[in-house]
Image 1 (cartoon, one colour):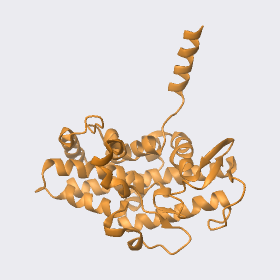
Image 2 (tube, rainbow, N blue to C red):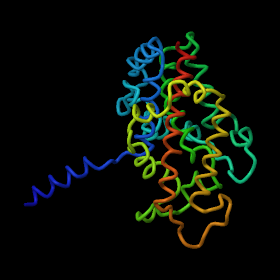
Image 3 (tube, one colour):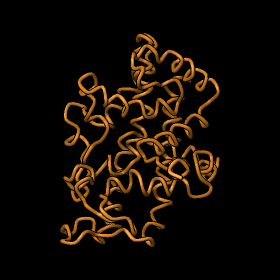
Image 4 (cartoon, rainbow, N blue to C red):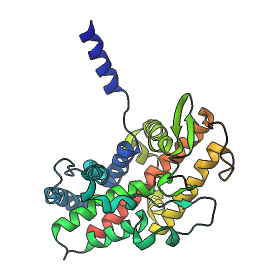
Length: 280
């Protein structure tokens, strides 16, 4: 009986979506990009990833675009080796003040400036292959980060990690975790789900417009979505922190699902554009 119960628990665990933006969101953005790039670009991406052994991170493989999309988070476990890149994953710009990327990106240590740097390195054929492979895997990950709104704006609360909240009937979460995991999981899985499902909801004729703009434009846009994420939870994005833990109820969750799906689609289409420009 104990063996049967253990087997059932394992099967239930496998059937329950365990992904979050950390994995599910990043992989979805990357897969949309890979499906959207030109064939010549796709072939060059595959050739670079085939040399990912040059990164010398065997515990963090990057031989596929999906593995590459989470590599930059995986290498955090290597501690001192990549500790310099910790601040590259986000830019916490106050959603209650005017947008100012420069003031919130000291010495280029923020996600927007690192995206721009990676594009330059990837496009520079004079760089060693290892440098270009690392630029590629960082770029794929950081474009996912930029389109997770709580990596682009906050209220001086570590990207919403300190904004305690309940998600529907699930207590004891926070705003960052909701967007990173619970809401992301539900939104990306909502039919038509997955990368191709989300991409199919963007008409082909609209995709160039979705991919247009600069990294700073996209930063400002994600910062505005972060503002709206706080507003959805608090009513007023800049309201005082309530004494009781606010609840993101199902009615508001339903209105946020298309917002998050749109962010994922944008991230993938824009990443595809940058890859085409760098490698095409």
